[in-house]
Length: 264
Image (cartoon, rainbow, N blue to C red; front, side):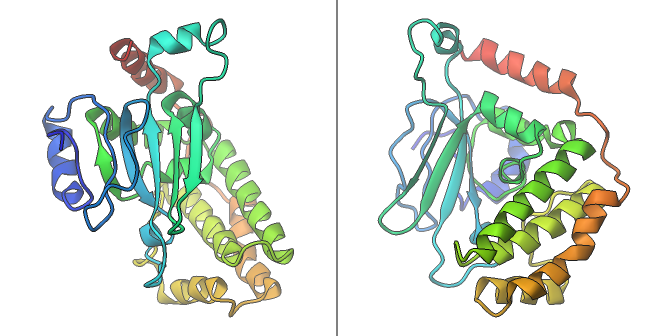
C-alpha cells in the first residue's frame, strides 16, 4: 500500500499530523472498507480525498446500513487544455451502486469547487465528513470550507435541497427522504447561524436524533415533518447569518491554480 495513503482506521490519528507535516505526496489512491478490503479499483485519475458519507457518517445508521463513499479527483491540466479539441467527453463525475448496496461516487476538483460555491449540501459535506483516504492536496481542500461559504448560496441551496427531498417523500419516492428533509433544514439553519457545518448528528439534542430516526423508519408522516421543519426553514429564509455575502474567490483560485500547475 502506498505510504501516503490513509486508511479509515488511521485517518483520525494522521489527519492532524498531516496538516503540520508534508508527509502526504500527490498520488492516486484507492479506498478501503472498515474491514480493510478494497471497495473499488484505482481511479483513472489521482484521488486527493475520499470520505464516508450517508447515514454512517451522520451517526444515524442501522446495523445493516451500507457504506457510502465520495471522492474528489484531479484530471491532469494537459487533458483539460485539450478537452474541447480532442477530448470532448472527459468524465468529470461518476457514481455506482455495487451488489451490496454500497454507493460510490466522485467529482473532479474543479466541478467540486463550483458545487461548493453554489452551496450544494452534498458537496460541502465532503469537507467535514470522516476521512477514509486523503492526500496532502485533499487535506488542503478541506481547509477551504470557510472561503467557499456565502449566505445567499447556502440559503438557496439548502432550501432547494430540502424542498426536493420533501416532494419526493410526499410522492413516496425513497424511504429516507423525510429524514433528508429534516436534517438538511437543521444543518442549513445551524450553518447560517453559527458558521459550523454539521456532519455527525449524535452530539445534537436527543429529541432531534429521535425525530430523524423515526422519519427514517416510517414513524413520521409528511404533515409532522413539515411542522417540525418549519422553524428551521423560516430561519434559513429570514434569519440573520454569520456567513459572508460573498465567498473568498481569491483564496479558492490560488488553491486551484497551485493544484493545476502541479498536476500538469
